[in-house]
Structures are given as structure tokens and as C-alpha cells.
Length: 473
Image (cartoon, rainbow, N blue to C red; front, side, top):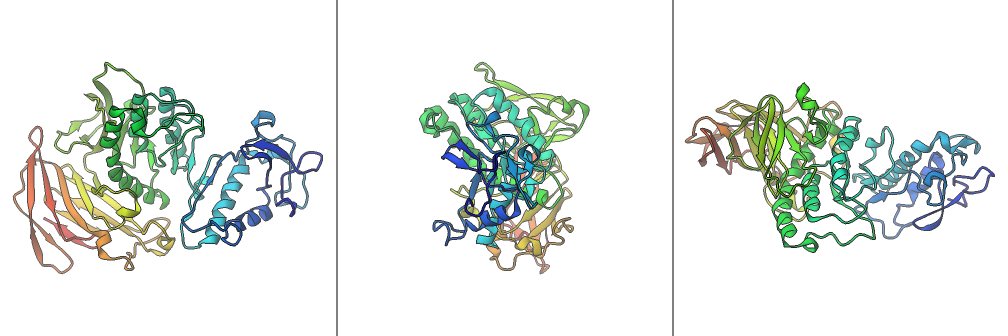
């Protein structure tokens, strides 16, 4: 890039040199389309022999960070060419989009390397429109309770501004977390749209077993729940990408809920998460504000529903943060524990309906290609009226149109292995599934008494497929 004359320049016209992690560094003029085009070629295997479609990128320090620069960035009077014919645009005028264009160029490089593979580029510097390119995170935080607490309004604000693919460093970038902070931040982090562990090179090792047996046990309890959470986030993320809803939103159902927006948030429309934001060794319970309506415990489908419109006191569980599901929702889970999302690709689904009447949507695509732009996805609406659960095609999505299914994938990718009905007033004694062929199939149903007067019923191994019409009565 230096030979091509595509670097940012100092006021005197020379290539600007600053200091960052690699040592003495030059800074490409990413505002220049020619610089972005050249940068994109660097991802080709013939340029970088280790490049391959599953090798992704993290754009860090791209504000840009300059350790020896004024304000820890490059001078405001540095010069860019951008889309013009000469270097006369000062950095002060393009500072906020420098990282945006860096991000854009990296995504373009991955697309040129593998046109039908979705790119993944994480960036620290972002601007309005960065959501079109990839994930962002909130930067170098600290392993402190106050930083855990501030992550909630920060991420909710980003999601409300369109940057739903966002997260914070768990359990803090600088310093060493105490075990309780470590546990609580990971329990919260699984609900971030983008969840990862990240730490400064001078911190201590952070594998759970390095923090003692109790921390290891807590991780073994809570981390398997990631499988359930991931699929719900993926479905909400699909709806966000289709211009329907943000992944994480503040709890603004009523005026009282507004008072709790710093430590409560909604995942999609139906899942309420309450962060544990402070340590108290003597605390055995925690207050959770539930908006008006009926709410079910995400972690315990035998627990009685709780009425909303006020705060409730719930036990403070060592293995997870409080999470509730709005009555009337249908969630979709994959219950089998795997080591990666790829290993879950063909796992069957569990459908969970909460309340006497419920509805929900499921979005599924292949997770890898861009074929969803041509309708290669499933978008179904499921509705339960108290006696029958029905699956039918959902409406056209604003960004993608009607779902056309994924005939290139085997049917096992769309199997339903169980349907769970939480909060039924009566004990069902039989179940039958009617598919496209019209012949009903008798199924096994088991029912357990829940706390209070309700029941939880499970129908195992229905033959219905997501992406097809059927009813379970």
C-alpha cells in the first residue's frame, strides 16, 4: 500500500508513521476507495497462503489507535485523499468513519475470497451503518462489577440504534475477576447477541478450573444452557436481519418498567433477562420487575406462572441469572449438548409453548451461505389455541420476501423431537399429529403436575417438520 501511495499522510505530505502493537506503523487511507480495493485483495490465498473460507477477521485498534499520538490517535491535521484527487481532507473530518471503512474493506476481502460464504469481521471502531458489515463490541472494559452493570444499557442502546450484533468483553478486559464476578458475567454474557471471553495479556488465566472447584461447577451448570440460548438468539437475529425487530431491547412495557432498564432487558419480544450487577455474599434473593401479563420461569417449566405489573422476589440461583418468558410465547430450542454450533446443525428441535394460548415464529437458514436472499430459508408461524398446535408458513419478510424452504438440506435438519406445553390448566391424556397427508398419528404424551394447579405436558417424537404444515391436537 505504501508503494501504491495509499497511506494516510502527515501535514507535511509524508506518509504518517505512528506506534501501535506491531511497533512503528503506517495507516492505510481507508477513506480512499482505491485503498479499500487493494486491502480486499490481501485475503486471497495467493497473497496470504493461510487464508481459507473459514478464517475470519478481527479488526482491532482501528479508531485508529496510535500509542504515541495526540489523544492516543493520529493528529487531527493528518491528510486523506478519500474519493478526491488529492490529499487535502483532514483527519478531523473523517475520524469517525475511519474504522467504518476499514471494517467495510475487510468484509469485502472475505466476500471476494469466498463469494457464497458469509463473512465474519469483528470491529472495535464503528459508525452508523456498521451493522451491515458485522459484529461490534464495547471495547476495553474492566473486571469490575460496575462495568458488568454498565454493559446492559450500553448494549441495549447499541441494539436500539441498529447495531444488534454487539457484545462486551466477558468477564472484563483489564484486571482479574473475582470468582463471583466471573460466574455472574458469563451467566449474563450468554444472553449478549455477541458473547466471547477476552482479556489483556497481563491478566491471569481465566479457564473456570483456574478459579477453583466452585467456579468450575458453576460453569458446568450454566454453560450447557448456551445451546438453548444460542438458538433463540439466532432466531431473533434472523428477524432482526429481516428488518423486523432488534435482538435486545429495553423493557418499556409500562412506566414502571422504565425504572429498571439499567439491569433488565428483553431478548426479542418475549424473554426477560435480569442481570445480577453487584455482589452480596449474604443475599439469598433478588428483585425482578415483571411487566404486566403472565410470566414463566425460563429455567423451571414446573414453576407456577407469575403475574406482572410489579416487582417480585425470587431466589438468587448460583448457576444462572433470573430469566422469564412472557406468557403466550413459543420458543424453539435444541436440547442436545454439543461442542460447537456446527455439530448442532442436524439436531432436532424442541418447541415450548407458554400459557393456555401462545404463538411464535421460527427462522432457519443454512447458517453459512447467502442463499437466504433468494428465499432459501424457513419462516414458520406456530400457534397454540389451548387444544391444538398448528404450524404454517409465516408472512413475507420485509428484506427477503417469502420463505421457499431449503430442499438441498436433508429433512433431518428440520425435525421436531418434542413439543412441551407449559402452564396448562388441565391434564391432557392423548395427542395426535396430522401432517400434509391428512392421516393422524397417535403420539405419546406425558404430563407432570406443576407447582400450583397447572400442568406441563410433553409430546415426544412427533413427525412434524419445521417448514411444513401440520397440527398437533
